[in-house]
Length: 200
Image 1 (cartoon, helix red, strand yellow):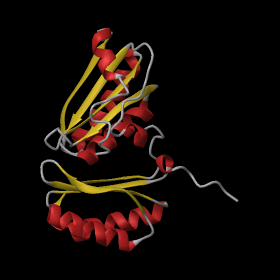
Image 2 (tube, rainbow, N blue to C red; image 1 turned 180 degrees about the vertical axis):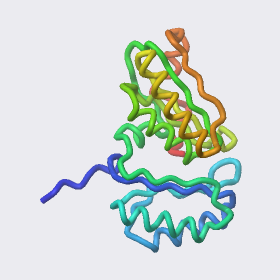
Image 3 (cartoon, one colour; image 1 turned 90 degrees about the vertical axis):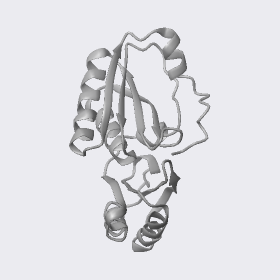
Image 4 (cartoon, helix red, strand yellow; image 1 turned 135 degrees about the vertical axis):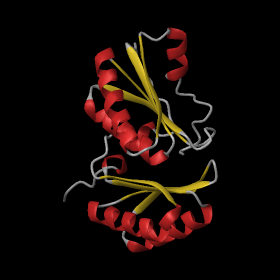
């Protein structure tokens, strides 16, 4: 009997709407369209609504399409990742422990979907660790991710993630910090994040 992949390794679909009411309506429609598992369906700041879901490739694709159709002009952004990086989902709303850090990079976007696309691409581009992904809560609807690794790897990862976020029209800013101060790194890798109870 084949092993069913863990949720973090399965295809991901996500939709982001500028209306809570329309987002909830579209979320219901996409859940009824195909056999998908919802990871998060909730309002986020600043008054948007998001649905993050997983399942088999064609099921996720069908649900995503239905959510786009029903969401109409309320859709802010969307994503479909048939093969997400295995570190993507665990980094959402969490801080992961890490040893010495040569460099850190930050990608900041104006939409949640674009950030996940950028973070996924960054993690696949070079040998970096996804330290944290923060989506919307306490950020006025913005999102960011933090990656760490060797300087050249972080530069490559951030460049690729930034490129995709810009193509989608939601990039805000990206930075690479070589040899970050140990006092700053301590805050970045503290697993006891005051916001760790927020998935999104």
